[in-house]
Image (cartoon, rainbow, N blue to C red; front, side, top):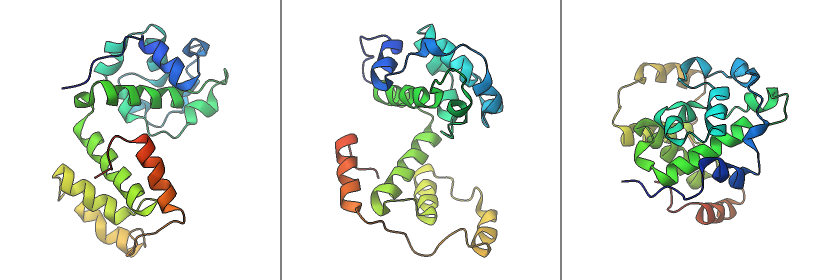
Length: 183
């Protein structure tokens, strides 16, 4: 079960978290026109911003659109109002994770966990580790297995995990930001 919603409106929560005013979005649609995921979203990026302007929390979270954003920041780059839709969507995800973690689609939650675990462990993503971790957590062992030989042949799956300098400092950031160590 999720935690209680904040007494602040969703609009006020986003303003507080990001320092951005969603009223700056003029609904021009340039964010949606450039979004590589717009065709997959039931609520397009400009639609998400409009529902936020209306403080329509339930409608926003009834859609999986905030979870489909790939954080490419094309929307932010294209915005003529110098607004940051990508930053707002990140804030919406963070709020949803805190208030209603059970509403986050399972596959997305699983990928997020596997991805963060790789960052915590190596300081960057180790693709084979990410794949194994995701497959074990999701139970979808055989999905996409046919693409492995081609990826190996093209050198897309390194044999050893990378390490970064400053891994200890990175883990300290995780400790300050996360409730628990990623698994």
